[in-house]
Length: 393
Image 1 (cartoon, one colour):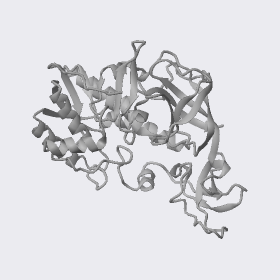
Image 2 (cartoon, one colour):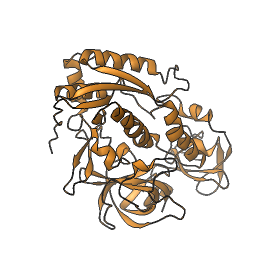
Image 3 (cartoon, rainbow, N blue to C red):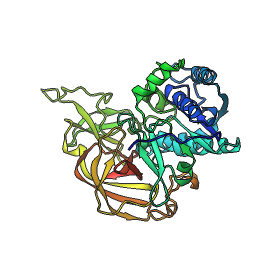
Image 4 (cartoon, helix red, strand yellow):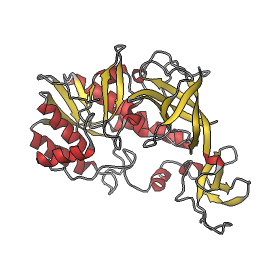
C-alpha cells in the first residue's frame, strides 16, 4: 500500500532532530508538505557524555547544521532525568532480575512519545514527528493503527508496539513509505551535511561501547558456576546479568573444550536460585528451542488478537515473522489493571484493562526466546501490540 505524507497546510509540527540523516530528511519532507516545522534536539543521557562512545555534542552540531540548511528553528531540551527515572532504572532492575530488557521500547513510549510529545504540545504544536521507519493510519474501526515501515530491512514498528491511541493519533512518520537508500539519496540531493553520516547502533544511551564494561559500572558482579546440559561444570561466569540467551561470543570457554570438532558454545539458561549459567554446544541444541512462551505487561494498540488465530509474531527485532497465536490470557494477581510495566505512565496503555499475562504458541520451534525481550504480534502490515517475555514454555 502506497503511503503519502499528510499535507501540513501551515499546521505546526515538532520533529525530533537527533543529528542523524533519518530525522533530517523527515524534517525536510514535512516542510515540503507544507507543515510549519520546528526541530527539537533531545538530550537523554548525561553520564560520560563526553566519551568516545556516547557524545551528544557532535549530534547537536549536526542537528543545528541540518536546521540551518532546511531553514527551521531548533530547540534543545534535556530529558536526562526523565530517562534515568522512567527507562534506565527499570533497565537495571530487569538485568538484576536475570532478564535481558529492551530499553529502546520503553524509551519510545515514555520519552520520545510522552515527554517529547507533552513538550511539543506545550509549544503549540498539533503533531510530533520522528525518523522512525514505521507508519500509522486510522483503521476501519476508527482507531489508530501502527504499521510496518515500507523498508522491510529498517522497519522499526517492533520498537513502537507499546504506543497507544493518544500517542499514535498525534504522530507523523515521514519515512513510512520510503527506504533507507532513498533517504540517503534525498539527503545528498538537497545538500544535507549529514547525508553520509553513519547510522547509530546499539542501545540508545550505550551506543557501541563494550556492553559488559558499561553494565559493570551499575551492577555488581557475582561469579558462579557455568554448567553444560549434563550439569557438568565447564567454567565460571562473571555474573548472570552479563549474559543473554543465545549468546555465543564472550562466554569465556573455547569451542574445543571437551569437544574435538570445536562446536561453539551458546548460553541456554540461567538458574537464579543457584546463580548458575547453563551453556550448550551447537546452535540448534534442544535447550535453545521452544514452541511456547509466557509473557507479561500485555499491551494491545487496539483490539486484542483473537485467541488461537495465527498471526505473524516476532520475539526479537529483525526476526522473520513466525506463525504464532495467543493460547490463553489471564490477569496477574497484584498487577496493575492497565498492564503497564512498573514505573510506566498510564498514558501508554492501549485497550482498557487488557490481560496482564498471555501464553503464546508457535507452529515451529523458536530459537533463543529471551525473557525480558518483547513478543510482538502482526496482522499483515498492522502491528497489534505485544508483551514482555517472562519465560519459555
